[in-house]
Image 1 (tube, protein in one colour):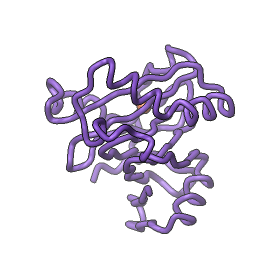
Image 2 (cartoon, helix red, strand yellow):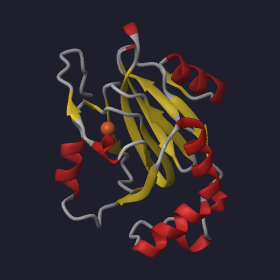
Image 3 (cartoon, protein in one colour):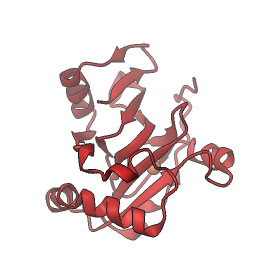
Length: 180
Ligand SMILES: [Fe+2]
């Protein structure tokens, strides 16, 4: 279950219904997948070969197809990041810049954890969404955000795209962004 920290107000949101309605009111889609579908040998496995990635996509095939059908995604893949990822610190530094995309950014966390920092609507300002295995989020097209790892520094996630070029990040300069 995701939890939220609102940077301006310092507020923390933990109750499932409140998390859901906060995200909804900020235009962020959120749902949950059952990670028990993940084969036992792939749980807590962060160094994945192509066969492992294919097995993950197969395990969640129904969920992926459902999202694709309801939200228009046409491509998907699996990414993994951990301390064994070459140049992880510089990769994270690159990630941690507020940016936008020309389509939704969808991540389904399969193992480990991650954080999306998202610009909310109106006075809400930036908020952090802490995601655990099973959490699925979609940041809307054009909405400033970035993704990074939590303290444990490991994640496996399924990404879904409408266009392959949807991946391109456009930097978003924002004087109201609070780095904490
Ligand atoms: Fe992004």
